Image 1 (cartoon, rainbow, N blue to C red):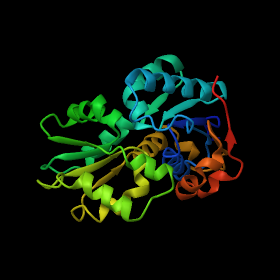
Image 2: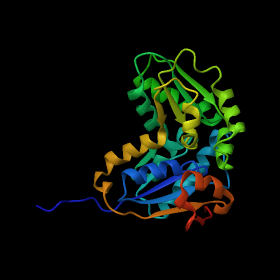
Image 3: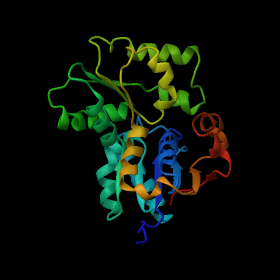
Image 4: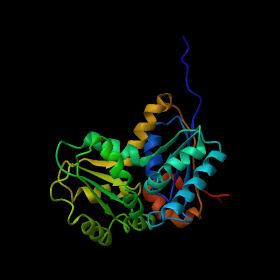
Length: 268
């Protein structure tokens, strides 16, 4: 009996900048058989300090561009855009599936956290203000303490290609200074830029503390949806709303193969 495989899927991924490349890389590792189209809105990065209406509008514009390019599934790789815009994007893109990183990350944290201790969330101001992680975690862990910390300096450091050094170390120490007592049960990296800093964060955390990478969480979700794509050789295309050369250092840090053939595009 012949195998019935799903047609080749084209997944569109958008983010406020280059941080969503961590999502693209995670999806590519698990699903080599899908086509991936990435849109980084580098002309308007960061989203984290902007108002909810503005972020929602940006998210709708990015999602519409991906749909216009023929994508079959839209992934919101930006936590802030996922927090404020996932429902609007789902409505606009229906019947195409839309997956946001917030729920995937919260679900993974709920599974990894032990029976005691607070769950920490490091995120942008916008994501923290939205309370999206708090709501998502309360669905499965209603009695658990959730401690959130806005980290507005981390995205600019990654975007500028500074994923190490004394400045970064000082910023991380500042953000974590009062979060580690009582001992946490898990830490959610609530921004797709933050996995680049995972090693620096781990040095300052209790040994063995689960660090939830929302990039891996969403890739795992998609793998379950498209098991036939675990094999194959899909195409990857990267697009940015600003000159890709302006983000060269950050792109090389996160996804070294990305600069070859990267395009600058204009959203309608």
